[in-house]
Image 1 (tube, helix red, strand yellow):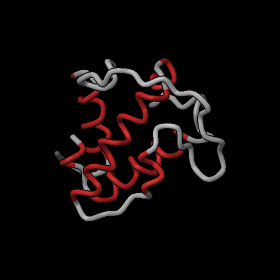
Image 2 (cartoon, one colour):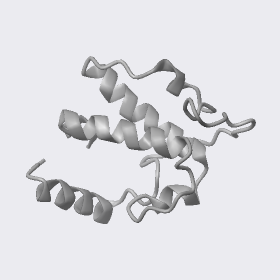
Image 3 (cartoon, one colour):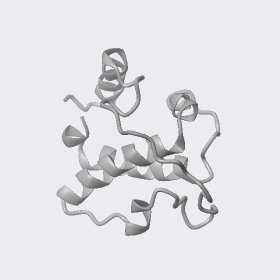
Image 4 (tube, rainbow, N blue to C red):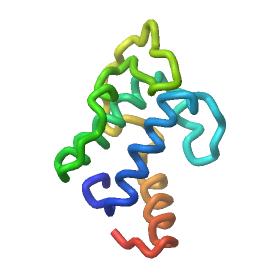
Length: 113
């Protein structure tokens, strides 16, 4: 779905994922609470997908985010972050029901994919 997102939504994914990787980790938010049930490495894997799409479109995300232990300028890096296998989808919660919810959310903003 990342390939289909308009510019604003793709850049929003980067911004939100960066925040979650940093000081936002563990802070409750209804739409993303599920990420906290998994290793932060999963969020890193998802962020790589977002940044790959950004790069394909000619954007230049900060290369610091390519390090799994990086958490932003104002958050100390992970001292130990154990890699985990990448799955498809990365999060098991990214199922058909979740896709439907995302598409409905986008449609409510006038974005039809």
